[in-house]
Length: 200
Image (cartoon, rainbow, N blue to C red; front, side):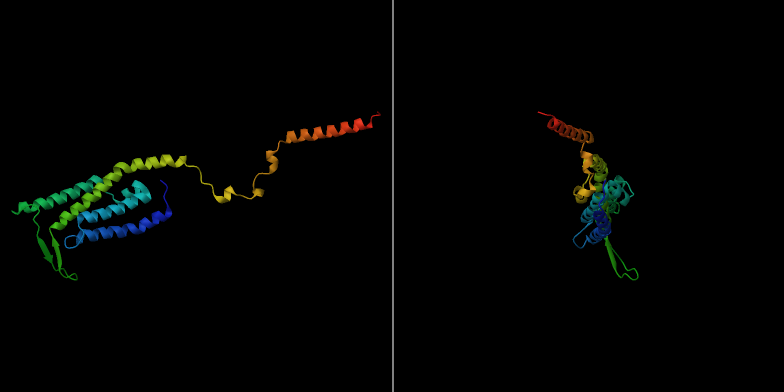
């Protein structure tokens, strides 16, 4: 797959920023717009950019885990978060609030809905990775098959070279035919002289 330098560098610069933005949506989704699904979609957009710039190989470098492992782990985390309150005598999807006061950070508040959002986050990412894993190789193979069929690029410099740089004009002339024409012209001139010298 042909890689464009401008696109490759741009994606390398944007990819970490988009991932950080997706994490912000993930952790701020309980009290502000965002959540696991929105954060997962934002991370999926970053993964799609990696695929556009470097193909499925670049996507595999970004995530060392298998797609179904990411998807299964997220699903297990979400289901476990939903069922865990029932084991404590509560209702399904019941959530609680936890507060802590670590040094230098002040008050930190978290809810039990956060693990559920984290699970949804990984479910979305795993699903996108599975899509690229399933169809990415086929698309790359088709692009590699189409690439050799393209005509070679001809630059303006090659197309409009000065006449002096082209092959000499003698290459397009047949030397044998030229010699034959010269000999025929010489014979005609000699015959005219002989005819003029004979007495009438």
